[in-house]
View 1 (cartoon, rainbow, N blue to C red):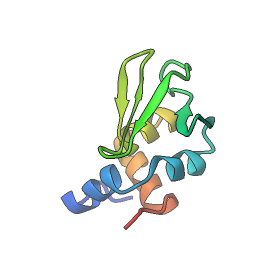
View 2: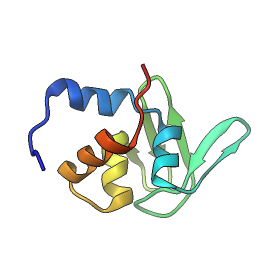
View 3: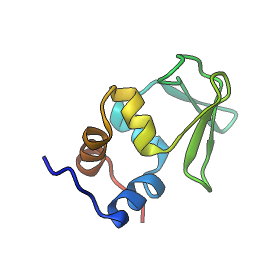
Length: 96
């Protein structure tokens, strides 16, 4: 399993994977409330969350943690950075 990734690969994973697709790929608990995507935080288990689509970040307001797709995958799958990147490269479709 390669341990080195290009800056472009990492940028694509952080910025071009839509969170709805990531949550679906992970089979992560989520729902839409009033048109807003909410999810269960992989760190604290609460669902006081929000998505910022312009920055491609999600935030848990309970534990005050921000996640990009790589961070979220690491927390949700309880894996390291390299495993998370490989998962994202092979399992989640990026938007154009």
